[in-house]
Amino acid sequence: MRERVRVVSPVACVAAVLLGWSAVAARVPSRWHPLPHVLIGAALAAATRAPLGLRPPALAAGSRRGAVAAGLVGAAVAGSTVIAPVRAGMAARTLPDAVAPWLLLRIPFGTVWSEEAGYRAALGTLAARAFGTSRGRWVSAAVFGLSHIPDARAAGESVPGTVLVTAAAGWVFGWLYDSTGSLAAPMLAHLAANEAGAVAALAVRTRVRG
Image (tube, rainbow, N blue to C red; front, side, top):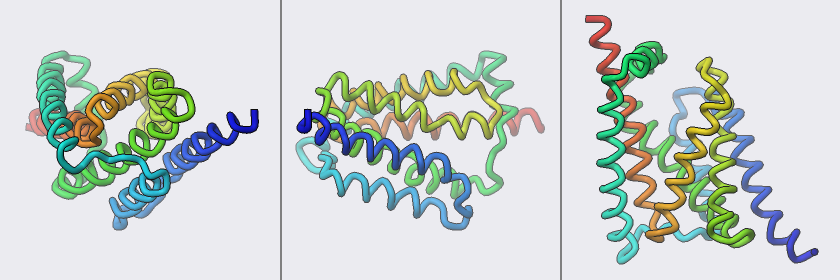
């Protein structure tokens, strides 16, 4: 029993750190973005000694599968813009005034790197050690979904819907990480999802204003 608690406790600690950070991250002054997010992701990955797989040969496998996933995600986002409710949702989004820093810094580093390092590498690795690969992936996916509750509330979106969608995405990202041994795979898929969504929202807003 003590051994079980000793194995599970690090999972709970990292999950608590991630959920706590998700609750306060929005209060960080924008001029600091994305530095705190980058550092927290890197610190968690280092503290848990999670394998990143960002060197050959794992990097090659992760890049190949990640590129395929990114292409599929990008095509899905582009195709979804023909759906009226999706376009309406994009048009209603509050977008940053400074577009370049958002696309080039905040999304790739403040969101993609920090979340993949924290949820997939750090939490995913610990959860796999404690519960096994399959169950561990569900644990990290669930925490990933719950971490988006503050964002959903701030945007006035459905909390249950946001949790379910992001948890499902987290499971897919976790599967990409587990199946390739490289964080490059989920990072590419995650980057494609966020960048494609951002570009689509910008395009819709421009079209509406035009």
